[in-house]
Amino acid sequence: MDEMRLLQQVGDETGLPTAERLVPARTRLTTVMTAMAAPSPALTTSTVPPTPPRSRRPVWRLVLTGVAAAGVAASLASVLVLAPDPLGGSTPAARADAAQVLRNAAAAALEVPDVSPRPGQFVYSRSQEGPGIRESWQSVDGTRDGLVIETSAAGRTEMVVPGCRNGRAAVVKGDQVVPGRTERCIPAPAYRADMPTDAAAMRAFLTEHRSGEPGDANAAGKDVLYYLTDSYLRPRSRAALYEAAATTPDLQAVEQVKDGAGRSGIGITWPSTGGPGQVVLVFHPETYAFLGVGGSAGSSAVLALAVVDRVGQTP
Image (cartoon, rainbow, N blue to C red):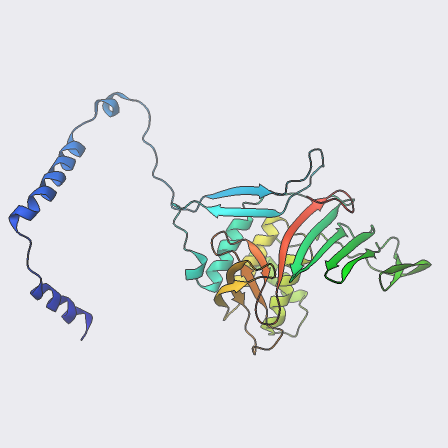
């Protein structure tokens, strides 16, 4: 039976309400219409302009946690919670398609405070993979020595990340610097000031700097992941990265994916053959904040990403 015939049958079998049942509703409607038609003295004498209608654009409330100690110049706590105004009309991520989730993530990124890192600073990151925690301090311009600390059930290890100065860097074997030995190097800055700030330019940038063969969508997804987790992006560049990623054909949204810290979110997968290297980026289902990586191939979580003044400093 089609929908129109079903509606007709329901109408034939449903009786009309009696006049007595309609009286209360008719009375309430008449009262409201009379009140709306009557002029209000306050409105007829006031010179205050009418209040504009509420915008349907989502309004984001920004909550910062883990704020750096007072007096630390230009440091940014990166554990950010972006919650949409419930009256804003946003479509929850779990009901949106993959491209829309990434566009929502781009809009959320633009609400994060903008910080321009200075050459002498460091990008601090903290991530989790199962019970293991990894902290790193990477030189903003790549010229200063950084540090990586990994803590797991097996213990704690520290490894110096030599900066590249005047084309030379200290040699590291295992987790130890070899005294008196250097090697040729090119600075690897943790902050790329040249990252594009619009989607079209970002697509061209990703194509020029791709790690895989042309047309390898899964490799392109790994490139997006690299820029999200291994470098600091200012809000406009992060938004452009999401917008550029949203144009990838055949992205899929996967509900109830957990990151490396056990946080549940919506996963965005890049096209692939389904092999062990498939990329699954996990976003918070309501705030669209990037949580980390999930899926059967392994998971990790981004717990913090901030700009600090020295190695060892945390937000």
